[in-house]
Length: 267
Image (cartoon, rainbow, N blue to C red; front, side, top):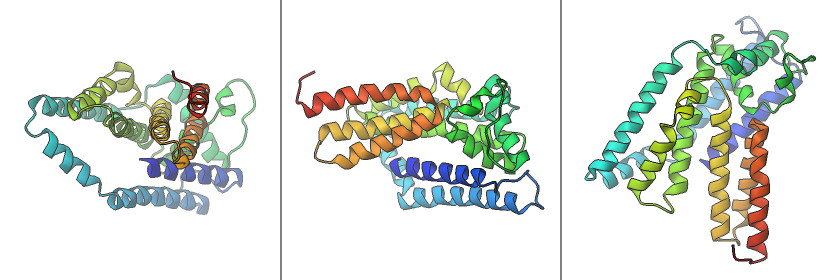
């Protein structure tokens, strides 16, 4: 999951760079810039697929099945998670109704595409243009393929799925498999998560990065000598902040814990 977060971060800034240089274009096949943008989208997709194959993602499901096949409660949790995912997929296939998505999460990237560049939009109507927009960079690419916003909604839905895997990896170090599945189920069936999963918002992307950052930070707390975990946690937390400024609230918490850890003060 760490590698996935890093890949997403790299590509988001690459898209930003293309936009600042004015290499974007409206969603038309006869524009070279759009071809570059679509090519980048395909590269992102194949990079994620390559990473999944490299990590042998199917082994995770095989191991999970071996652990839970004789536990009816765990199988029930998996079934409920799958059902909730199916319900969310149905919602993704519908038209975008989210107020913020229609106001700025999708509209601002559409304006960037129409102008062929990323720029600051003056005025109070699109004040969000002054906010971090990591997720909107992916929406920008998706709109070159699907102007209706369906692909953008799918991207945010997949961030929600990523949250489940991130939460699973985080909690399995402290809980048994059944309790881990229960934690994932409680998270994913929360009404606000279900609502966010069918809209082109950014909150699940922020949550995805924060979960991974927290996981890495806890690994560093367990072994302070492995500073790579702390560095990776800082980078991923930066990606969360680049998604939504509210993620900045996690930074003081991490700094306080670092202080206690380095000073060897008992909490």
